[in-house]
Image 1 (tube, rainbow, N blue to C red):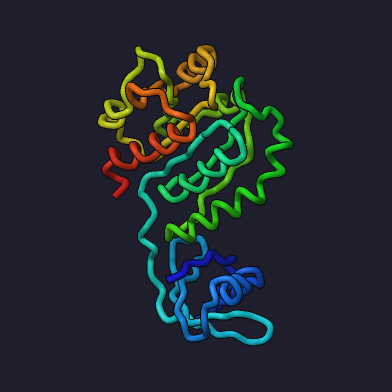
Image 2: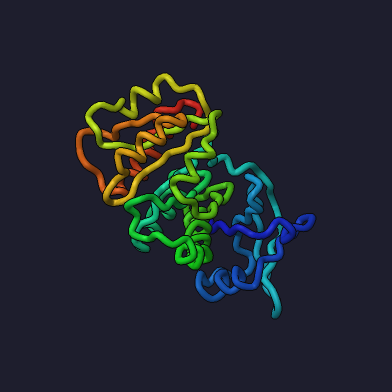
Length: 243
């Protein structure tokens, strides 16, 4: 059954009024028929099973059942990933959404390939579309939040002391991610992953000084997009509260 996020005011009583763009997707791209059932979501964690109806001006759905989506992790994961090439970062957003990331925060560090936040801001609309499509495909109950881009030095000045703050690093003298997660009892995670060239030693030191724990993702050197998904999936796996 197809899933569609809609604005909260699109659901009135027992009816869903699908936005024009979503209506076109339903009729012309997916070629669904009147009488078929779809799932509408209002980003509250609830899902509304609805029977489609078409007229000349709009696509609506008659709600026949409302239930909790039941697909959101109980833990909150913020992925603080340094900006990379367009294809790589879009892939991170897509797959991170599928896995269960709650918030994405693009970071500009010393070695990121893009250094101007204005260039990143232009991509916001496309990135939000990628996140929504991935959330619908993976049956998420809520859309991950895409935060504004932040520079590394500003990021570590506003560290959340109530979260488990982890920075991925390839040094030999750091704890394994598994060992850190086994003793963690926090429900919010800030996961900081560097660009293709990694973080500088100064950046890692600065993060550790404000409360980040430096962790290793294993003996092999991972591409940054692989590291992003590896750390997210490991946190979900080892944190029993995620189920």
